[in-house]
Image (tube, rainbow, N blue to C red; front, side):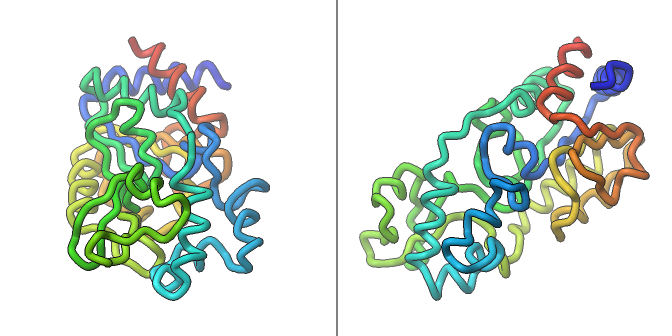
Amino acid sequence: MDTEKIGELAELIGKSRSAVFFGGAGVSTESGVKDYRSEDGLYNAVKQYGVTPEEILSHEFFFEHTETFYDFYYKYFLLSDAKPNPAHIALAELEKRGVLSAVVTQNIDGLHQAAGSKRVYELHGTVYRHHCLKCGREFSKDDVAAFGGKVPHCQCGGLVKPDVVLYGEALDNATVSGAIRAIANADLMIVGGTSLAVYPAAGLLGYFRGEKIVLINRSETPYDSRADLVFRDKIGEVLSSAVKLSL
């Protein structure tokens, strides 16, 4: 890591009074969660099903091939034993200090909350909540796991669906509105672990009116040229180092 750039990030954090973090799959891969396109990612994991991740995680597939959907969902999402990594912990610390006003995430694993973050806008939903499509009854992650891999049904007979935004579904309006407000009022934008290629989520950065943008991602993004600082290092190492230095 570039220690000089870490120092610059620490200085930006120290001056900020309303930072927002916008993150994607790369934040959770350091916890062992599979991303989409890496060698060990979901694109390879779904080969056994003969579809792409976009297909198996689509609204249409959920209703037409519910058993296959849930087989995949149990294996790669619901039964994950991933724990928060240094990036999640550093962000929770910044919120505790009153520096970070919100986390806006494309991830559905709940690791930000597990680390202690309170204000988290989960654009694509979460595996921690499920609901009956017939009566609306809510089911927790553990409730659904108790079905032992079988398709979960409510006592009323209705099909239980994860509160996850599947391909072909719209983002939750309240979540998007909250994320937009947080981003629009931020003075520092830290973006990490995302290629900024998934829309409409990535488009929310257009609402940022603050002064400084920091990008932490292994590969290039469309926002690199607009960023004040760009890191190609592990996001956990960058954030934890900068947060400690900013004390």
